[in-house]
Image (cartoon, rainbow over all chains, first blue to last red; front, side):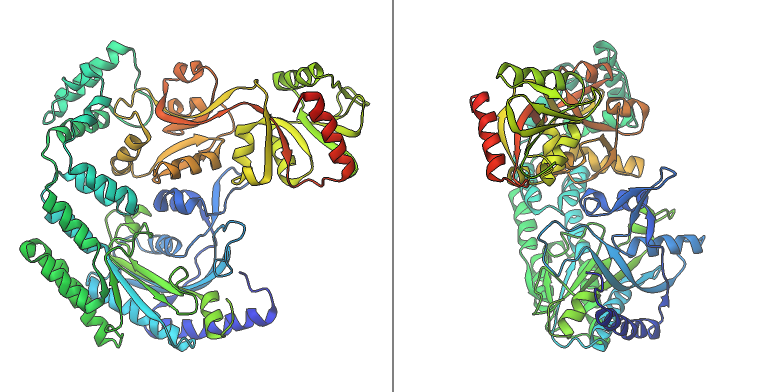
Length: 392
Length: 233
């Protein structure tokens, strides 16, 4: 909630100063991106689920704007405005309000207006080190603000991506499984579906077209689509091209003819997703499970251990950190390492801080190529609630 | 409007108004405008503790949600769009058999590879890679669309709010598909669109609806009983 009393406002300000001091001392430049942002960038990046919670409005010129639902995207935009070369290295920190709709009856730990204090590191190619520094800085800031007991939870979407790449399957299945990773139920269903013969999926394609589609011949398939459209009097409208429609149909025909995913591959994915526990033990588990695929999985597993090593060197208590392969499934724009700081008072559903790696986001926000980036933010009202021993 | 009067909200224009007045008339309840013919106040002849508010069909849902009207006649689609928890806030007393319209998901007929919501989800990734954005759904049923897409597990899209001629949006290039009402499907077909096989979100018609938020004093309750009796409910 917004600071409702002068006293609470002052307490939040005092806390923010302690946090920002830590951020600035560790080499982050303090910035204040605009609160009102063009809606388009956000909505194209974050998907409809966060849009449903974003306050969107139209200004008198008819432009669609929003109250920022987080500070990561505004900071990326600020970076792009300042640097022609998006990969320029920079570390930013901020403290300011963010806004998210909450349904009637939402808990007090989920206010619609809250202050985020956070950091973003953009352009640092040594990813594991930047990840570890982000965690260490956030923990130092939490400590400076008076947080004593907490748990570090980590996950790594890079491991999942590498695992999917390491398993033999058509490329499109990989893309679709990655796309579904965010929705565990749909993911499980699709995994089972891929393990079955897929001829049934062809029935939705009109028979005369089905036989004319050549899985390996785009030009031929495009002609087949055009012929079908001419015969049925269908016009091409909208942004999708005939090539896209033909390619999609080709994939379907190819899918139907492909061998199903072998049971041992399905089992491997399921076993991976079931890994959770102390971070170091989980690392050993990963090595065991993926021993047969060491050639492809080796680098990402090494990177997992290197990150733990860096964190440990920076004073993070990795012995008590907890890894979960499923963790990160709710946070759509993250691409690699993810983490959360949980307090015993507020529990799993309301972390006091969280963040991760988002290597795709800069491109989505307008950069010409992918830029390595990692960041994290503290939910300052929750933190104050915990350190003051009351409700947030 | 005093709390001692039952407020009945009815559509203020068009076929929906005519059919509503006709329906009440057949039940022996004559709705009559009081004062100016262009005014928005009226009465039910013979029921003293009731007044009629002639307002637009979409505003009726808001009147029922906030309790400004005790009862109202409007489309189920409009009520469900404005209330995420419609079944808690209002009671659907009777489907009236007119004002039929289905709220549907329609894609360009040209999307031969997309027959179901699952197909739509499947092309989302490729669409984004190709066009650098999620596909856009034009609709005035923003909340209904979100609920239905979430229910179907489709999350990678963007809603473009549309206030009229939604069916023209894909051809005009302002959106890629639409969620809109249709009665015969002819308008959709004329615009090169096709309803998905599992794309019927709601089969809507005009309903007589009671508000849980309104203040139901004994006098108001009495008026409601008289109306319900006349309607045979």
